[in-house]
Length: 365
Image (cartoon, rainbow, N blue to C red):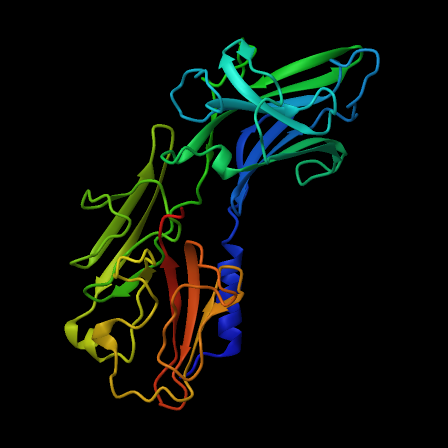
């Protein structure tokens, strides 16, 4: 039975739907809600002030009296204020151009470096909007920060605190989340995940030599057998558990693996790897059938291999030749790490189409 176009479309739609993590609420009371999500390589943090119905970003008489927000991060997760350029940082709307963004260092719990002293690619929007939380227009602050600005290479989460200044009458009312008596603080925090939840998939039929890995590369790994590699090679059927954690938060998932007998594994038409590591070490550098499943007498006339990225865009594959992908996109660039979907149509050989997901894994330099 060959795979149909509708099945391919459904699988690609499911893959696309997983590209962005759903919104996670980190704080909520009767007046405020704070939530975040991951979209691509950016962390999106939204703060809604449900009781602020006016927008004031300019005040010629007193430039200190306007609506503002400050996001503060204990990036290296020491629980302390760490002086030094780019270590613990804040983002806020600029006093001189209230709807633009500046970034600076947090030096102590009550002192901060110059606003605009650090270069940032983050963006900030401030406005009166209706949302799913309230259909009355209210103040909504949204910041988009490249994950690279919050990630040191080892943590799973970053630590965030928020401070809001709202114009109320002739003065500005300041609220902090979580509450704190310090002017600048990060030792009290909300954990903000920098990675999608761990997903090992559903129950899977495995053959000896196959490997298990999460759909997203993580900074650390702890498997059921206490191994710490990027992937796990099961020897027996049973539950396999992966935990990814730092000193702030933990992500984990469990999958049930069923190891098939040797007869099943050696007689299926073609089997493809679920992990490719194109790092030029001579091992798993390309996507092609596993050696134990290659049919040396197979006629490749009319066969086709198609590779799709997580957005459903075809990025590789050829017709009329042995299935092989060198992990370079059709337009010449090396494929970035991540999850891909393949369709191998064996043409007129009578064999079944082979489809599935695999992960390209390597460290970008």
